[in-house]
Length: 236
Ligand code: UDP
Image 1 (cartoon, protein in one colour):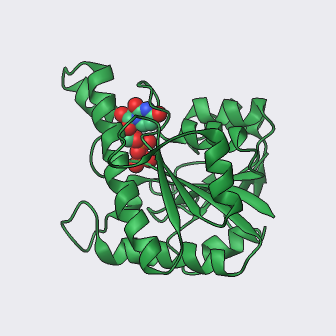
Image 2: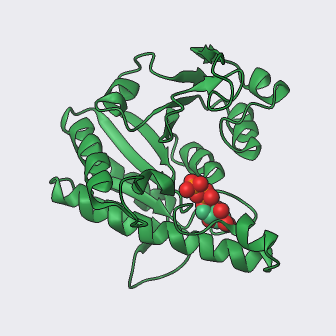
């Protein structure tokens, strides 16, 4: 049984085609990708969802807000996204549990490692909400930290903006940027490549946790990444 953590950004739930913070068609697409991956068997999947479509702590802090308060708003945003994803995945017939790092009994289960593992063993998709519950982080770091905690084999970082892996330069501003099929954590750090937050990168490196960065919005790509096919970039 392969245990995997999938990190998807809040913005992956939005769409350029609609003004909605959470686009129903996009969420349905993601849920179908997840359900189809689960249907193939042999997979235990935990999802860490971001909140950037709703709020980013750093944005509020830049406008003069207290950072910790602003980050709490961001974490609450991830809970909204987690509920949207839960609903969509269940509409595709897969059982799910949302586990929140911030206590909110009426909304989600509290995050308890042993319970999360039990859900995974029972074939439920576990959605980790509210990041790690601590300010001054983004959801990249809890994706890595939770993966280590539940002994996942890999972190899959699904991208959504058309950047389908790790490049030597930002491909949106450098058309000649070259994509890496595989790269080491040391090189990502040395070249300051913006794959994930550096805190998450150093955490993965220190804990020997591989990371695959791939385009989550291409149909079937999640399944390919889960099969270990060389989609995107493998960082290890
Ligand atoms: N956040 C936090 N602690 C965490 C995870 C998230 O404070 O452990 C806050 C932080 O303000 C962050 C926001 O939640 O900006 C939304 O998460 P993120 O920016 O990672 O969303 P994404 O870019 O993945 O959509």
